[in-house]
Length: 265
Image (cartoon, rainbow, N blue to C red; front, side, top):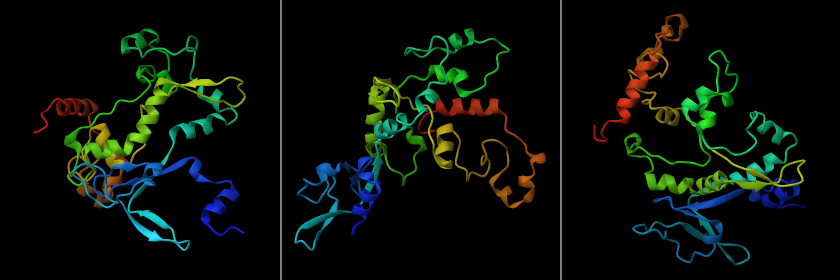
């Protein structure tokens, strides 16, 4: 009879340790420690320079052993493992290749907007995301950029954020170069390239990424219309017939002004 949660998970075939790695974090500097490295730590303090924060406490078990209990952890799901499981689903490979047209059988470099325009007729409809220029312009791999002007004082700094993203970024960089995976119904391994042109995020992060101010701003609460933040208490604010939409040309102009401004401005 199963007496522990780990035993139950293994019996049910839901052993998450095969797809999730639980990293140990320093509560102060957020340095990540792999579980294999954590087991060999003799000193309970963080190994980062200028950081002496305690990483774990010890507890004596019933078997008279000593167990390390970390103060902060972060579960990380492997991108490669998730992709490998996805490609073993029947029909998934064909679904991922649906965007390919004549001449798209081999890897190709990104194209310019002018080159994309040359392949399209003026009256040709764009029916899906892969018909657009961005689909042909984004290279595989990943480029990390950070704007210090968008960071609040209580948020993690750049080094801490980069540290937390390191396992994901490392795998994404490998996949950007191309790796071979087993595919359902295929005798040979298939080479897979991965790019990250989009991100799923909450409202504050989405607004920052798109170049908008906080949703709590009085004059720029909504990126679509000119309704002020204080108008949310008035039912008229939700009357679509009275919406006053923003001018996208002005929005774009302000984005360029912000991009080219000094960091101290």
